Image (cartoon, rainbow, N blue to C red; front, side, top):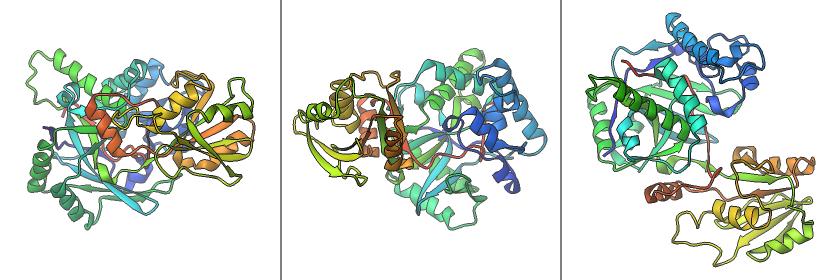
Length: 416
């Protein structure tokens, strides 16, 4: 069973939310955060990217930067830019992108569920990135930003959410840059709170969709606090961390595409010939061509688009990893032909999220920065859940979720 609880959220007053809210810490660099924050002293970037309060070039891992995050978090509360709710609540968070809305429940998820595998992951995490986020959680004694979970579709929860969606939201704004709409409701009924808790308790598992490092960091800090407290009871707030949970069928996963710097010494003709061993190759001309189905790829090379369809026998439909297009392309193109084996460390490859469109792939090849581009059909949420259930790990750079969660709508303290 999945254990969740309501919590006393720390949030901006309604009239300040658009000054406080921000993009997540890991989708922009320090200088982009500095530019977006500008002269806005209320921007959450002062807490999640506090290096912007130091001279340009200051490392985001400088110990002073973590301390500045905590100082700014205290300042935001002292000035009333962030205010803690008087009692525990669940919250509902809706995001609308290109006419499609997805509704998430903001909950306090159970640390032990993560440590014992009931909160399932599909990606590897890096210890250095975990430690960075752990320092941020420790110094603030709070989950400043939520993690992004999926759960199997649930009729009772959907009906509850839709009932709130017909009411006036607490927050309702269009985010700058991407233009997506964000809405937020406070669940203010004890009966509704009980329904949410009970329905989650019926679920065998929750699934991390996005934010594996944040999930690991939040859970590990909670586990640390359990060990450090000689009077630990299991009821302390540090036993929980903040997550936004969406019904799996509502989530949008975009393609996550590849661009490569060279063809491993091959000419274009030699590269295309090598592809024919495992793919049916068809020249689609100069107009942008997008893959239309699983196991079909688009290649952009020398101002032409090609369809690459994986031949029967090159993948295993019974293997949740082997059937993935990210695995097929990694094995049979990037590794076998181009000798790019480690996608995490190779400097010969880069990755482009699908929100940028295939035009971005074309641009980066046409300007000479890259030699070729490969577009993939997006992974499905069902594939992700199947992999997580099997205990296996997806290849790197396999999923790109949009829209991203905005930060600063609500914060979870670990001591109250």
